[in-house]
Amino acid sequence: SELAQTYVDVWWAFYAGSIETGNGVDGYGPYTLAERRSKFFGTGTAVIGNGGVSKVNDILLKATVEISRLMSTAGNAPAMNNIMKCVRAQLKIPLIQGCVMYAYKTDPATEYEPGADTQEGYNGEFARKGELWSFCSGVLPFLHAASEAAAVTLLGEVNIKTLADTSKAKWSIIRPLFSAENLNKMGLKCADVGGFVDKNAAMTSATTLNSDFPVCTDTAQAAPADADSAQCAGDWMLKQVATTEGMTPAAAAAIAASPGASAAVRRPAATLPAMLAGVIIAGLIAR
Image 1 (tube, rainbow, N blue to C red):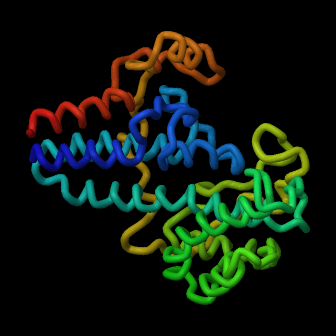
Image 2 (cartoon, rainbow, N blue to C red):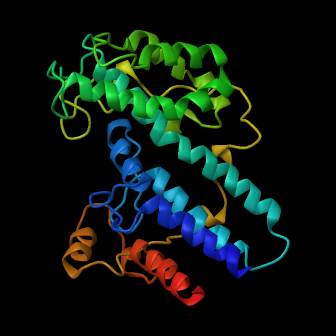
């Protein structure tokens, strides 16, 4: 129905935000988070066509376009249900990556560059503890469904009791909680989450070790009924659905000239500004 199609557009508007252009630089929403976390874990290998590189964002944009297409024809409910399992799995990934990353950053015993032991400043230990809680609290329900004991342990490590609490989460305790078995139980493959990029100041840090969090090896554990990244497959995954259409000429030229850009970036297709404009127009027409 037309209303259902509108809700699909609204979902993407909330996910991407109103100022995101595609490369994860300008926005503040979940789309931007996926772009930023992908650098640390080596999962920024997609060529979305709009400047984005996050595998999560690439899959979610393609899934959104495919669901919109399937909704125009009756009898596609089973296919849409499978794609939604893919979507639910992908939405967990940036939260898990953020939780793991800040566990590594917060513990001064790791190889990550130490922060300033102060209440102020983005790179301070207090800020890192706040980020750790923000991401890990989002992961807790999913981890609890996979392993209640692991969730209890994670909560005990990341919970901020008072501002005067000077304790720091221990990487050696948090790291094993995100085992291959637990990731698989959450509907994810090891490659979905990735592993630390080794000693790269632009991606992680000059001292971060891949060996501290390498890509794990999947187990035979079955995925849950409602989320499964194995469903992120099919002809719809092969389609190029985003271009630089709608961007400023300077931004479009920079993306087209970037390494990995393909001729597909010049093809008319769905772009973030165009999709957001569609939501706004639909809202005005409905009034």
